[in-house]
Length: 264
Image (cartoon, rainbow, N blue to C red):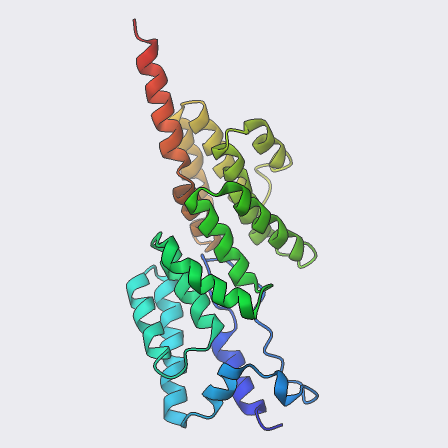
């Protein structure tokens, strides 16, 4: 098939795109001989028609963008993506990664149009849904976050992705806590225990401690999670969700306020 070699190159270049330090279902770049030429995305056709040197620069820039994102260098990530778009501006995976970098910087209004572009082409894209979930959490649009997160959790139910499922459940848990629906939050995670191979238990315990005004106990739970899961990329997702939700500030301020009013 005419585009088969290029497709194989692109599979190697784009598989395992990192998003928020967690695994996801990679985009489907099927290269079956039976695949019809007209099903190949326009951006991939455009890229395949570039000179070899241009393709090398493009794939190198995208690989560098992924690496910069994984290390938390969002400005560098975006700069490398700008290089990619000198060659083609049609690749939804570039839009997705740029949106991820913008969301990490809490530049939500800039990220949203990019997500809408991806949605128009690939509405069920897993990275897109992860981006929407985090964006809504950061914007405080908790019902929207839960809606997207529930749909994503359903889509991976049978894919043996417990680590990702737990991190998504934590986002949903945080939404309920921020809505002050604490009983519902407890119900969501009542089945989670320390024997689960996940930071989820310890991070939820930390949040419950914050709600009760016990910041020392909260830090103890977080430190235990950090110690056990220090080498696990998924831990970054929990830290990011905690920061984006604002749960620490919310309950810290409320508890300080309560203490002031209780003074004679």
